[in-house]
Image (tube, rainbow, N blue to C red; front, side, top):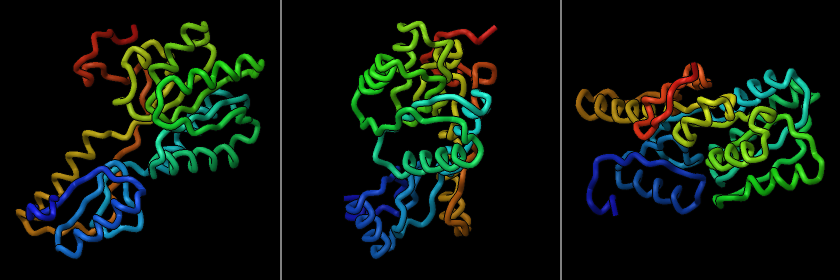
Length: 239
C-alpha cells in the first residue's frame, strides 16, 4: 500500500519474517529505501538498521546477573517473542554464561510466547518442585506480572531480576528494586537518529554510509532511573 502511495522512504520495526523481507525487497525495486528500527530484518534489502546490538545487550544482561550472583547460583530464563532481537539477546546471554560464569546453572529456559500469565505459572511450578532460584533473566514484556507474583510469594527481595527496556517495565518495580537491573535500548534515541539520518539524506544529500547504527546500551537501576521519563508514573525515587 505504501509503495502505491509513492512514499519517499519507509521506516519500520521489523521481524525475521519471510513475507516482510519480500516486501522490503519489492520496495528496493521500486526505489523506495526502507530503514529498519529497533528490530532488524536480516538478509533483506533494507538500507540500514537503527537500534540496539541485541547480541551485545544479552551479553551485558548475563554479566550483570552473573556479578549479582557472585558467579554462582541457579537461574531461570524466559523469552517471549519470535523475533530477531530476542533470539540474539538469548544467544549473547548464553555465550557469556558459558565463558565467564560456569557455576551458574539454568534450571529452566523457556520461550513463553505473547501470552499473559505464563511466566508466573512457570516460576510457581519451579518452586513447587523445590527448585531453588537465585535469579531470573526476563527477555519478555511480562516483567510487571512476574514482579507482582514474587511480591505475593514474599520473594521479591530474594530472587534477582534482570530484564530489558525500561519502556516495558513498571517504574515502581525498578524503584523498589524488585527488578535489579534493566538493560535499556534507549528507544527515543533510536527514533531520533533514524529521522535525523533521513533528514540529512533528503535535505543535504548526505547518503548514510553505515549498515548498522547502534544505540547505546544503558544499565538502569533504582538509583539512576528517572521516573519523570514515564509520564504516567506517580512514584517517588528511592531515598
